[in-house]
Amino acid sequence: MIEIPKLRKLMRRIEAQRGPFVLFGLFQREDSPGKWDLVLAAPWLERGKLKALGEFVKEMSDTFGEEQVLSLSRIVTLNSNGPVLHAILNDIGSVTRGVERQGHSLFGLPVEHAYILRATRSKAA
Image (cartoon, rainbow, N blue to C red):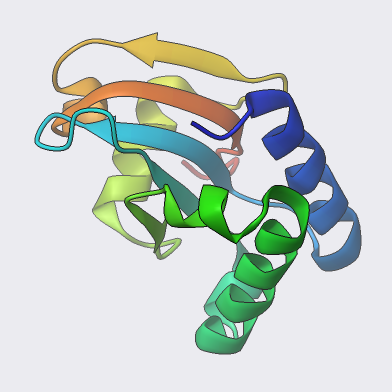
């Protein structure tokens, strides 16, 4: 698994360059034991999504090495208006220091384990 402290440093470096993440976390789905999804949401990811995601993956590969990046099950970007993002943010609120959650059906989703490094709930939510 990717080291959480190293992932946090990468997140902060990218936020300094591109702007804040609304959500940044590792999720282990019930149907994928031992595999982790990196789940992201950010306004800058929604604009020019493919290019922005490609640049993110390159920076991640430079930090962790291609083998570590390929150890992720997938990298998922969530739309800021999507129900999945809203469910996570409503459950967890705002997170700046990082939290770990375990259990079945976290956030109303089939997730066993999660490390949330950033969650920013809008004032309107």
